[in-house]
Length: 209
Image 1 (tube, rainbow, N blue to C red):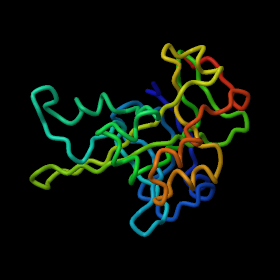
Image 2 (image 1 turned 90 degrees about the horizontal axis):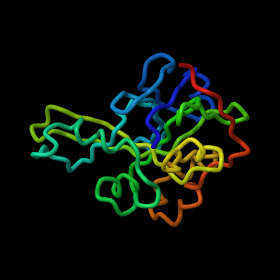
Image 3 (image 1 turned 90 degrees about the vertical axis):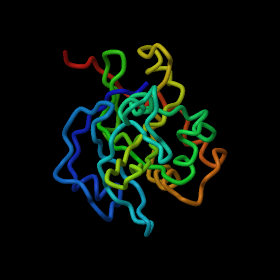
């Protein structure tokens, strides 16, 4: 699972590099992020423009309703901060978001097994994500949330992850464009984006205590 990542992101650089048109966040993004925190994400708006927003980490699907097991939204969201790439096209929680609401989550590094992993070229890590908007039945509450898509771990990360998983890292601008494209809705058209990032293009170091 990917349950912690760090961002030390200058918003101006982020906007320039990812061709963001609208910024709905405030200030730069320098923080460690955990499930249920609000994290920076890039998505397309209704006009097809890239916008930078803050989404709660832990996806809450539009159809969710309180029940005996999950009396509040956070109880559900604690189980949905990661989505397996192999099944996101068929799981009820994720399948609509996979077709219609994909996003990109920028990071500096991610944490697994006491290690911090990053790209060797010092570029942003652009993590593949899905987002949703949930509204309460009375219309008084709106929650915009997201999940990070995971895949099999590469040979570097698998040493430190007991379940041998890692986040899907979008390799370059073309991959980001394809992931955000509303014209691509079938898993087959996106499958090659959801492969493990090459181990020889990543480095790691022990995380600070």
